[in-house]
Image (cartoon, rainbow, N blue to C red; front, side, top):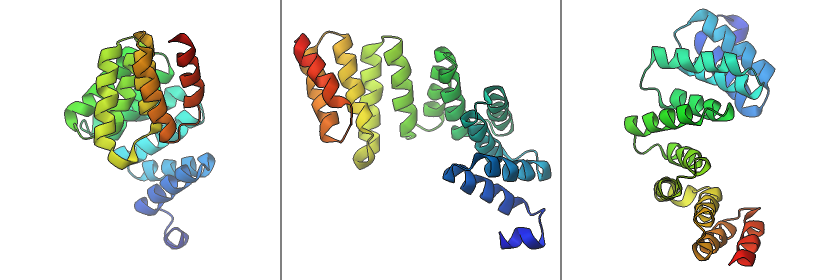
Length: 194
């Protein structure tokens, strides 16, 4: 903040403050500082991604898509741009395009774990359960101790989709052990179908 008092046209403090306000959930302030940064330097992919995220949260979906597309044009190997654009495509129901973006992320960096869970969710929605299980399992391995419990539940839901309620229950119980708040309801439902 101090740097902006003396020189309001500093690029980095504007971009950094935009990111800080985005993380705090203050979208109006985030947008203000990110737009300042982009006025100073229009070819700033990280600021475009951050502004795109803010715009998506504010339900400005077309503007968010434009930001993600511009970031990709400026830096074609930017994982965050593809990942966030994939999320936006999925929000719009364009699962095939979301799948393509998550796959692109994995091609660029196979260790980007979130792409696996996101692509797994797309595959689950498309009822491609074996492929989804593979992506969720890969995510779990790559995430290590920082695994989202939803990955276990999603594997359980895949097995339930295949009518294998024993494995569905096993994975649902693992989700419960990892603290998933809704897993018990799924497990109880699967037990009644067994």
